[in-house]
Image (cartoon, rainbow, N blue to C red; front, side, top):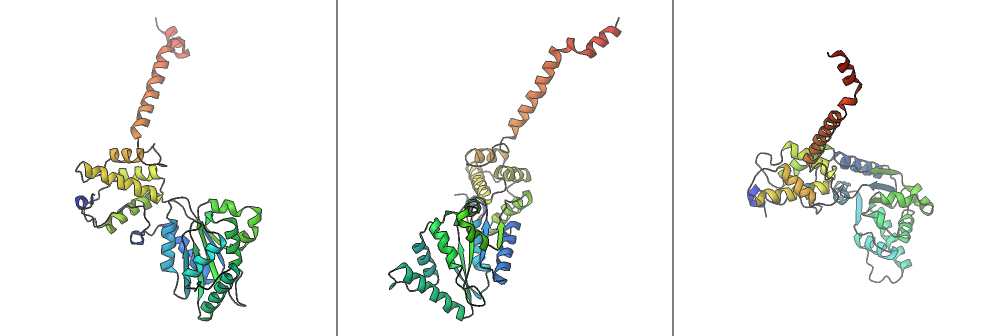
Length: 312
């Protein structure tokens, strides 16, 4: 690969979520603040949504590090689970012995008992469910019922739903109104702006071990932002491919041509920013066309007729 060529210790633009490369993006920082504030006020339900590729899974892993120790965390990354599978996944995270559990009722009782034990030890449980938009209807109802578990003074479990915008659409349905009304804090992740994209690329190169002069010129970074629309996953894919192209030709600088080729090979990117010369040619053609039309109809223009009357 291109590690040695660019003096890198590890690949900086993989699409696998890696907390080593976590960059303090404004949107992520605000999302963490919302979750921590909700937990401190004792709220039971929090919802975080974001488009594909905006770093939701990485945010989940960041939250697992940021949530204070007086909370016990449970993380469910696979949401394609029926109610029993979901309860067993949560029970496993909370170290519940489910070997002797035969029925769903027994499982629910064992889980409730474990939550009470954790509460008596002075902790509360925070459950993070990633890709929550994919939860089956029965499992969404099971999540709502979990949120009912509480003592006289506080919730036994706090639930953070993290998913794509489709989660909002699902919750707007009439049959989910009870769950929707329990969500007290919400936040929507946004894509990076141009300045964040530049900082993001530089940050990942530095974490990857790069020490030299910038490889990505400012113009290429700006065009990368336009092509990716500021979506971190697309930035990673484009930058990785551009580094491969430069390595293949023995170069240490990325060019606009590299971006054009990378964009053409990447789904869901804006091709316009990768082909600026196309718009230049369109502009030149339009100007030339106007000039030709003026020449063709020059004899019919009022100005021409007026000038002809003044001339001898």
